[in-house]
Image (cartoon, rainbow, N blue to C red; front, side, top):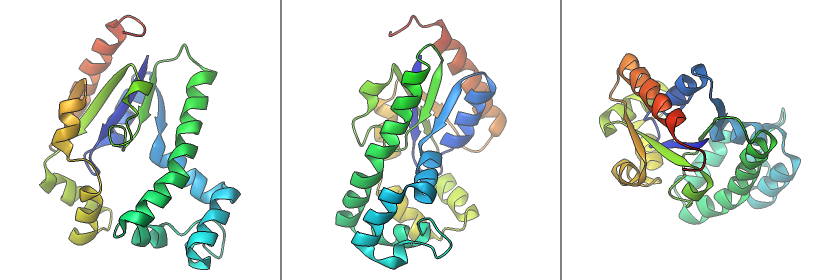
Length: 197
């Protein structure tokens, strides 16, 4: 079983993903793959330097994530360029992992699953949704101000559009126990489905 997990920023995808992992699912987090690429991929580093200069890289090595965020979240052209660099690398990483163990139950967190028309890569899609007020609270707890948070929220498809496209929806207004119970039920349902259903 290959499940694509998505949702708006700050909706709790990673928390839901960890809950699935505790139930025995093989979990891949696209954001973690991006972080690894930013730290270790020399070809990506070279592309960043060519596009934005030395400020895109840290003196101690790796890419400067805050510099990149400042470039891409306020300029649609730069965001498109950035996505063109990183998304194929991320997709290749998780496709390679799935191909290496096709018999496993996979849960892949893909923030832009619907935006980039990737739903056909999965047997089932799951969306985690939260009210925008909760998204803003969670992003503030990560150190983002309201303007930064709204820029990131508005660069994604509206959460309710993702909800309408998903096969399964998890509601995450704030209670971990509530989310955990929903993941438990979703996992049970998914494991009852026939392969490639």
